[in-house]
Length: 263
Image (tube, rainbow, N blue to C red):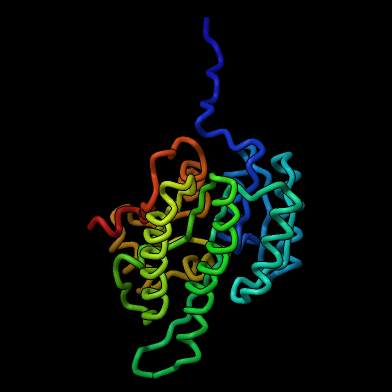
């Protein structure tokens, strides 16, 4: 007689509230969906309020878990502190952080464009630090929590042919910030890891991929799996790192890049 297998409790996130920055769309929303499908109530945070509010409604209807939306500019440290405190009080504690908000601006190094450099660093590094610190402090008070920072394969290698030194540098810094936080908090119950996606086909890049061309051909050629990733292909890693299945994992950077950084 066949029986229905019992889902592993290792991946059960029921009742563990997750804050997802940059969660209105793209990679953040795809990972939030994976957490919600395993029972985690979700707070999507973004600066795109209309898109974020709709995403929260859709995700709640799809998964049956509580999904809220909060406006949050992660580059504003005072706003981060205030918003995180409010969310934490309301839900009884953020237990999972998907620290995902980020951007890319292509500009050649020789242009000396400090404004573009600072814009990328402010969001990709300072923003990650602000949320990491605010949420991590409260996790430490409770003695448990899982933080997942979104890094990039661009923090491991330097991409070609696009000129994105600021992005590459910011993601390399996110990886080492991840390791540093993990070591500081390892004995205090808070785990900190990062994922490092490769080239992904998101809402922002889908048209670029559909148009094709030499740069897309080059990216696919340099990726051993010969294709870009899809946002949902990050969800499993997010669930793993958020759950008890990864209870002995901290300070790790997990590459999800179709083999790009292994080549």
